[in-house]
Image 1 (tube, one colour):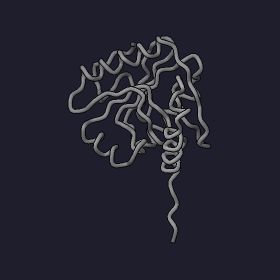
Image 2: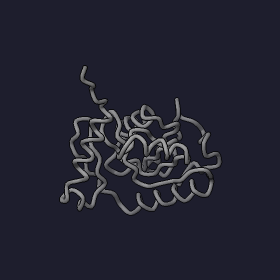
Image 3: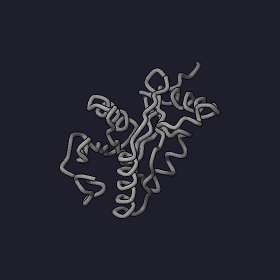
Length: 168
């Protein structure tokens, strides 16, 4: 009996086609795909990059036993998304590597920094996709630099990274 690929695996295959294209590798934008495998480009301002770095540094300072990264590609059931910042324990990193590239298993923490082109509907959709892919917490940094910590519901702070500031 033939096996059917999961949507995440299909998006993983599509992502590998995209990253193999020499023209697409030269794009100066954040690249993701939607649920149809179509390319979505997201230009960002320097403020966005500065916030990503501050989040990554704070996570690395607060947590041990893992690493923070920027722009990690995650093949989800709704396309391949690149979380702005992630934190994954060493054991989760090993598990993620086993799923292929891009990973189909999300890190414990996925962070999205909202840009002018984002809205809350998109952020909630991404949060849901990351959680379905295994993220324990999704953080959304809004346009006023406030951090919204989300697990099953919005929380006052992170349970994984207690002490992470409410704004960046």
